[in-house]
Amino acid sequence: MNSRIEELMARIHELQCELEADLAAKREQFRYRLDHHRVRFEDEVLELHRRLRTSSLQYLLRARLLHLLTAPVIYGVALPLLLADLAISVYQAICFPIYRIPKVRRADHFVYDRALLPYLNRIEQFNCLYCSYANGLTAYGREVVARTEQYWCPIKHARRPRASHDRYEQFFDYGDAQRYARELDAMRARLADADRS
Image 1 (cartoon, helix red, strand yellow):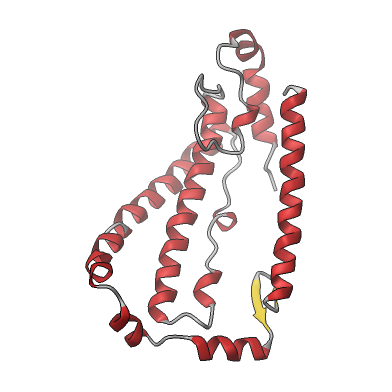
Image 2 (tube, rainbow, N blue to C red):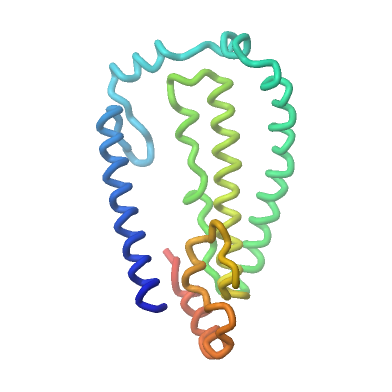
């Protein structure tokens, strides 16, 4: 990796640390803590949340008609999501050991804590579960594909994608045939050794 990319990666790490500090400040502001991956609000905050909750019936009665009519479209995507989840998991289970690619941990990508917020009614909680699953699946699938890409075709595009994955900057420059031929096996070996936990 060239020094400019290393500098940018270091800056990204600094920004991630700043983000963590900001999140800690938000936890203090809204008076909760994380206890073994569980969120714990202070008692008076829990009581306030419960008082602010809208009942499911009120939620439905206040909903716009078009929102209600599009619900089957939104939830109609559930089956394709489940099939994609199955396909990604089967693919990873069969292929990653053969390629010596460390498996992606599902738990790193699926987070369901919003559905536990006491100020959400049952419908809102279900919606949060559904969105958390869909976004978690997308992140999980993206990491599986990113590791596959790093193994099979770790070459940057001539035109940079709008939102590349975290591994992209490690890839070989577009058109650098000599480095690709010289270092592909080493990159695969680094992938096999990295991320193991």
